[in-house]
Length: 273
Image 1 (cartoon, one colour):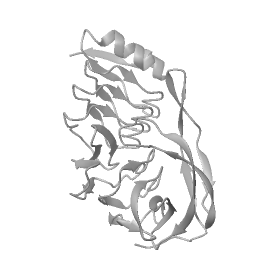
Image 2: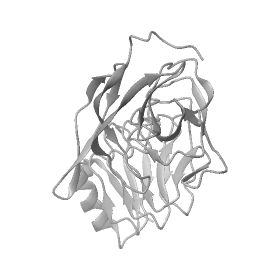
Image 3: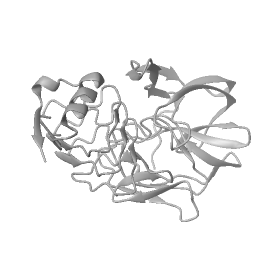
């Protein structure tokens, strides 16, 4: 994999923070990664079962391998940035960096790696930051080491052991969400520009903030009766969305949740299933 200029280390990080009962979007901020020891602020998804990122300060040594920028802290490694966004292809994330096991893929670590088609997650990884693979519009396949008990891969989707849909490959044109999924994580479908329709299966209780952000071709979403929470800006950047499919008994609730999320409900056609 070709590395870009080592002086070019800017990473875009998006945070979501909780205000009252709603998750609100925080504007994009840019941080510059520099070598050496220090304290770095970043947005982190925490445990895979947690829906929203939380701000965390980490004292650690920021380092670079040939392909990745990473930080070592408490004898574990966190991938922070991929150093190539075009020639990455089928990529296997190292199981260790700096002699420490890789346990986390940081927020926006592979942001807009347009050449990424497949990514393999090593066995020790247990956490993913917000938007770790967002904007990877060629990504259609996740592979997870069989020894990893924290997550699994199904049909171009990355799913936590607790049933949270963490990420969907940006190159996917259609998806069938497994029945074992109980929540859609923040930004899970972010920048999936080829998707036109998504059916959320029964059993999913929450849909995270900005879950479908910038899905430009999305026209139809089906909600099950089980959904009781929808995060802020769930359909931000979805100009083509015009149809929401719901049952008669959940129509009022889903409409209210979408309105609270900031969706333009008056522009949506509610179709009863």
